[in-house]
Amino acid sequence: MREQLLHLLFPHVCLVCKKLLQPGEEYCCSSCMTKFDPFATPSESEKVLRQTIVSHFGEHFPFERSWCRFQFHKKSPLQQVLHSMKYEGLFNLGTSFGRQLGAWMLSEGPPGDIECIVPIPLHRLKKIERSYNQSEKIAKGIAQSLRQPVRSELLVRKRFTVSQTGLSAQARKQNAEGAFLAGKDVRGRHVLLVDDVVTTGATMAAAAQALREGGARSVSLAAVAVAAKE
Image 1 (cartoon, rainbow, N blue to C red):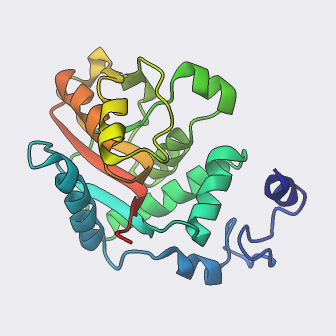
Image 2 (cartoon, one colour):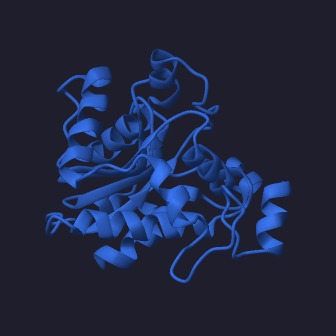
């Protein structure tokens, strides 16, 4: 809460080092951004994200393409900033991350025939508690770059799940299974599914399965970060 109040009072201060931001910088200074462990190329990020998901779910979890901007490390500056975005009310950080991620997706050419962008949904009770969905904010930032609509209504979380934080890979899978339901308008579409951080891919896998069962033609994935192997 202290960090949130500090940034509300001094919005041009870096969230990590608290130094004044320079023109063109948002929320974090360029120096601290270099500590976020960015991927060198979108192709590299796709390879790592794909390996992460396949290692837990095997090749039976098909998806078209995947992108992420950073490798996530515990107790890192990136974790600090994502925590502020997710739990401390700095939801516009999500839009900023989304714009960066969208530009990153385009840096190696068009990302295919994606027709709409669907954020991982929160359960309605959790959204009331938090007041916003960080994945939806990220999706809106991506949409500004890709010029494709955000269609939050195409996926709902039909049952309440506990936080995935601290759960084992198997527990994450069980926690997310059957938690989502696709809307009828998803049929025949290529959907870009968006989340903040991918750890094992359990949430993405469950959501993608719901979209495919709802008739989505194909599903691609995008996240701000993927958990690094420590």
